[in-house]
Amino acid sequence: MSAARQSGSTGLRNFLDLQLQHDWMEGRTLLRDADDRSESLELRFKYIARFEKLLRRPQAQEVLEVLRRYGRDCIPVPLRTERHYWSVSCLPSTPGKALVRINASWMELFSLYADGDGIRALFLVHLSDFTTDHSLDREQVDDAFLERCVVAPEDISYFFPRGEDIFGVRVRGFSSIGKFLANSRALRAVRAFNLTHMNRGRNAYQASHCYSLADHMLSDGDTE
Image (cartoon, rainbow, N blue to C red; front, side, top):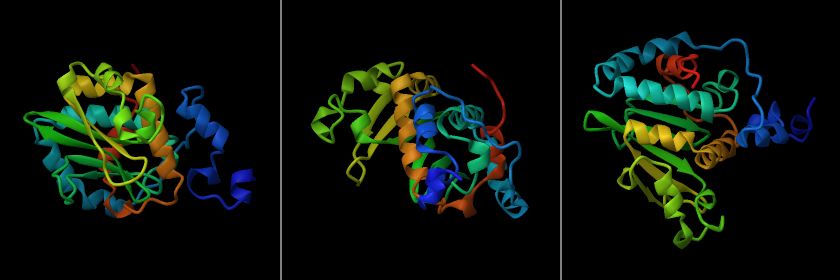
């Protein structure tokens, strides 16, 4: 039994020690995932109609490709943690009219929205990962770095959600979203925020998990 389990820790620390989590966050290791998925047939059928509605949207293929990449690169052991530690919602009814949203614990992690016939993304991350001095000073946001993470400066903007160390990054366009996720510092920040909230305990949004979307997130897809 791991030290994390013995100490009564919550979240991923029950089966993934902090050193392994840190190494994954830094891109220094590949984590061994489960061989199979657990599944609720009731939930799978519940959201099929929403998934089919999403597929009729002009943004559908870009959404699925970004989700596949996010599931592969941004969520630790996604098969083992599916629904219980993260979930993906399809056309959620919450304000904002997101096409898809990924949650963990009580926190939104990532959302995709329609932007004309294209898409825009919202990443929630730690503010301290995007300041020049790693502080919580909003005046120290590293604008130059953020602009390097996208194709064109106008593709990125940000805001400050409620919370001491939370930062919202908006990225417009499929190409810029891909470039943002390909940047090692930005990817590390996304992973760090996701680990923080997946370690806070079980996912509060299990009942809105769309298995049809998760199928794409967990598929092999491209291995670029």
